[in-house]
Length: 114
Length: 115
Image 1 (cartoon, one colour):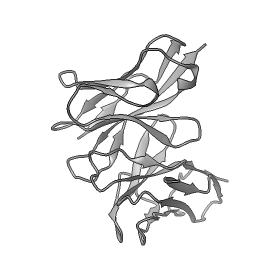
Image 2 (cartoon, one colour; image 1 turned 90 degrees about the vertical axis):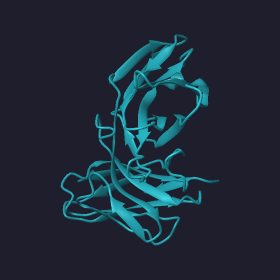
Image 3 (cartoon, helix red, strand yellow; image 1 turned 180 degrees about the vertical axis):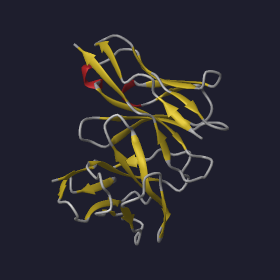
Image 4 (cartoon, chains in turn orange, red; image 1 turned 120 degrees about the horizontal axis):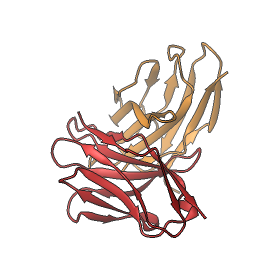
């Protein structure tokens, strides 16, 4: 069953703690993306990766970090430097022809600071 | 800068009536446009896209969208709404300038279909 899997679905973080969100895809896509969703603000790009071992900052990268050691995996770490991390996080992937093809999304991880 | 606007936060329609969710864009060159739907606490599902060709694009679940270059619009439509169509809808445009492939999203429009 092909697709993108995000885990966990719900995550709670204490103040000052780093947490890592998992994103795995078996679609053989080269490009992967992390978006943050807040109510009334649409989706904003955090990081993206077009190839293994390479990634670029998006529009709101501060307080986040990523790695791309395998084509299938693109984990996102929310660090203690991110002052307002409570949000819904979405991972997506695209085929190599990135502009013409649609992106596929995972089911999201809801992160809450407690 | 490339951008997408969805002028309505919410659209209300009665079941069986036609629906329209509006989207306008601002890009340089020819746009690659997409519509997605999101149900509560779920990821985004792809509905349809315009890349080139026919201005009327047909997609999933009976949805279609009309590309209008002169009005820089890409409105989502459905001839007969269902209660199950109630969800959050996003219009998006591909970032072609930097060839990053990233999608630039509108703010989203909540569609409420009442029985």
